Length: 285
Image (cartoon, rainbow, N blue to C red; front, side, top):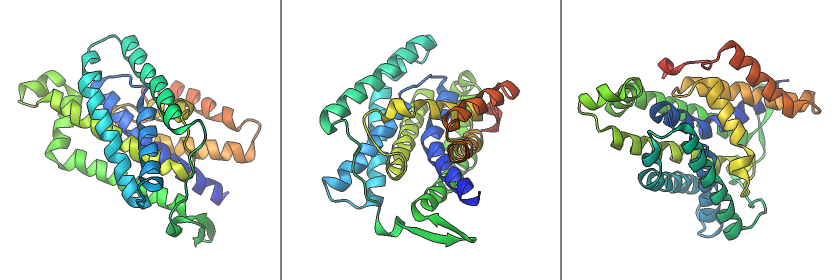
């Protein structure tokens, strides 16, 4: 049971790393961005290319994944997304899902339809003993990364001027503009940063989920579940939701393999019936 919970937490941390950027951008911009998984895929392919083509190590490749996804996200925010901030949600959905299909076609053309080869660094391979359990080093690394990102995000949002401006814009954009906050620039930086986090999560998923061109569609529902169950616009909400989703999914597949893939949807429906605004509403940011 202990190892199932550990693996579930590791999987949940991975979902959190990818989905937290979507939570912030949806909460701040009220933009239904179904292409968030595509930015995670960009980060994953950037890391694979950096390691396999340019000979970079795993940790520099993680930096490359964040930068690549953030740059692409910034360009798309400037050229496409900002034009639809005030548009109908259906228009936003059509744009973002269109970008997903474009990304699938592009990466299939350049990298082929197969899963990309990935070998973690020697320091993250194998297992180690932790509190009497034999746990995988790579999964332990994911958990450490998840807590580090959580702490960093909370520190930035609660202790910095940038975080104060984000909170102000989340609460009331009109008042934020009245106080001199450049909301459009804030949107640009926040969107790019959220995409960068997704790219980092995509690179970290190489050792767990694998990477193929269908990644953006295959795992989109999991990212949306984390954000909806946790509460869009929050940090703690998606963190708690991701852990619960990870544990439920792993435990279901381990103990009830015939129902494992179905239990996550049952969990989502029950949670949203009890907490329709998410586990932690926007005021928990």
